[in-house]
Structure formats: C-alpha cells, structure tokens
Image (cartoon, rainbow, N blue to C red; front, side):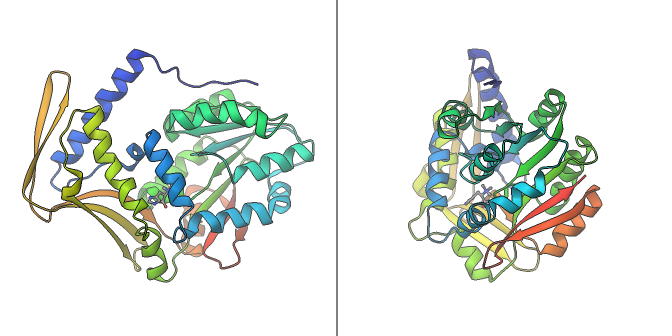
Length: 331
Ligand code: AVJ
C-alpha cells in the first residue's frame, strides 16, 4: 500500500495559515464580501458535513448513494475496459461511502487498479489511508491531500496507466457554470483518449425541495456555515460573534444557482489577526457574506458543458426520482 500525502510540518501549517489569512482578508475587504467554501472543511466542518448527509432534507447524498449502491455492476462495466489496469482518481473523496461500492466490485472482478483519493481535508485523507485497507481488503490506496487543481496535476504525473476520474457528490457544483466549464477543460487536458470521468451533479427540480436541502430544520447547514466564522476566530484570533450572523440560503430556479449567505444582524466591527498584522472589518446591518454556491443543472446543460470541454457523454445514471445524475464522460 502506497501512501503519498503532504506531511503536516510546522512550516506547511504556518504557510497554510497565512494563505488562509490572505484569502479571508481579500474576501472580507471585497466590495461584495465573500469567503471561500473550501475552508468549510476543518475537522468540525467534516463532521458537520457528515451530519448534513444524514439529514432528511439533504437528498443529493441519498440520491447518489442509490445510484452507486443499486447500479454498481453497470458502473463498473462502464469504466472497465479490456486493456486491464487503471488508476481510479477521486476528486473530493470524502469518506468514500459511494465509491466504496465501486472499489469492492472492482476487486471482486479482479480488476487491477490503484485508488487515488484527493481531498482538501487532511483529516479525511489520513483516515482513508488508514481505514480503507481494512474496510476493503486488497485495495491499493495512494492518498493525496490538497486542492483539486494541484493534486490532479500530481496524480496525473504519478499515473502512467489509463485514468478514470470520479468527481461525485455535486462537488463540481461548488463552482459557477463558467468556472465549472474551465475546470472541466483543465480536467480534459490531463486526460487522453479512453480516459473517463464520472461526474455526479444535482439536477434542477422543484425549488422548494432544493432550498430545503440547504435549510434543514435541525439547523446543521446553519452550523456548517457558521463554523467557518468559528474557524476564523480560532485560527486567526478573530472575534466574530456567531450569534450576530444569520444563515440565509437562496435558490434561483432560472440560473440554477443555490447560494448561501451569512447576514450581519447589526452594524459591527470584527478584528482578524495573523502574526504581526491585523485587520478590522466593518459590517453594516443586513450586509451579506457570500459563502457558497451549489449549482444545479439540467441534463442538457451538463451535456453542453461536456461537449465544450472536449468530452463525449457515454452514459447517464439517474436515481429513481431523477433528482441526481452521474454522467460518464469519455475523453
Ligand atoms: C459537498 C459541495 C456538494 O454544495 O451540496 C451541503 C456542500 N453545503 N450543504 C453541496 C454543502 C451545504 C455540498 N457539496
């Protein structure tokens, strides 16, 4: 079992903290304040996202889980070709509940492959590298901790076999359509003919169903958003008053953009610190911090994106409600 993940040394931690500081300050100094959703995923954020996936209202998880658990054999047949061994690279692997079905089926069929999970969360990667060989005996794992772009380049440099990329969970939906297309083109540039991608995306549907998924009654999604302020408080010695920001999710059924904001409940000033430097950020009552987009598509919009990025759509797998789709793209 090979494992490659970035060592968490003191210097990388310090570098990560100052990048975090720079990104936070840039976002909160902007005319329209924003924070980057990739920063949701610290240890507590990982835990809260696991809880979101168990929420009644958060259907994208159960819909895609249905696809992977019910149609495992078809999916495996679609990604396996006669030439044999390949590398299975997963972007944003999480705890790999869904891809786990594929791993088991591939082993059962004695297909030779290496599983290369990429995740922004160091917790998740070290968990996977430790846990997978026990949960799925015989699997070869090479974990990569970092951002999609950088780690994808690293994965394709390490891989000399056919590549199958998994990009599940509507993770591509965390980019606006233009960025998603640009990212799909980058993805294509790392691939060669016969390489494949399985992209899982959430579909446009009744706006009330979508909005409820980002506004669960138990308030987990609210905590998930507020946790980023809490993280800034802890890691950047800031003094956000979490009770003074309200969770405000929106969905526009025309554009398909589901966006979350935190709304300042009063005129307030927040101080943020890193080493020698500090910054005071002013908030007006009612002012929004744009936190995250979770983009929804129609299948024809997804097809067009695939085409523009240089892929062919080879197959589509839907859940029984047709709320979610896993599309097979061929390079
Ligand atoms: C993990 C990015 C796909 O956008 O649906 C869930 C994250 N945010 N609830 C999504 C999320 C709020 C999720 N993704």
